[in-house]
Image (cartoon, rainbow, N blue to C red; front, side):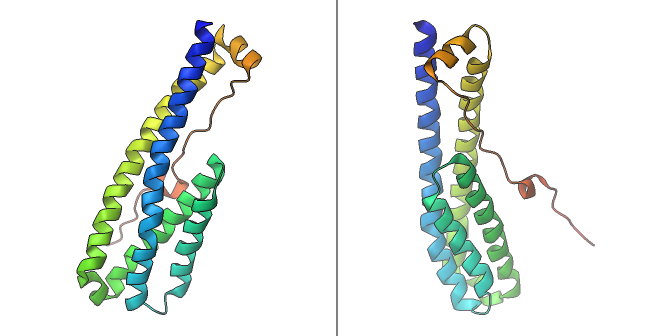
Length: 165
């Protein structure tokens, strides 16, 4: 009975950790239209980049599986990097106080996402570890406790930034 209850507690922690991460992802989704509108005012011919970011946001908002959430998160990260790179090409955008404030706010949200992703993965590690070791593996199989997916960083986030002189 103790093993079963341990699984229930850990599974609840996984759900709680995911919900916390989801709150920060939602904050980012909510901020994206403001960023896109600000950039649109200065960089009208960058519509392809703007459209990619909006599509990624919409995909994230409708995602239901961890794989879909990760894929949309990775697309959003890439799109936002491209958007913020535009500020170098548009000095007026770079000087826009509202845009800079949105970028700072997004930076704080990204930090929260990173922290919540770290916590989520730690809880998943604990839960999955219990699912895979004897004698708990038998309880897991009997009661249908299955391992959970980690929230992984995009491959591009792991690559070093290329600096050329």
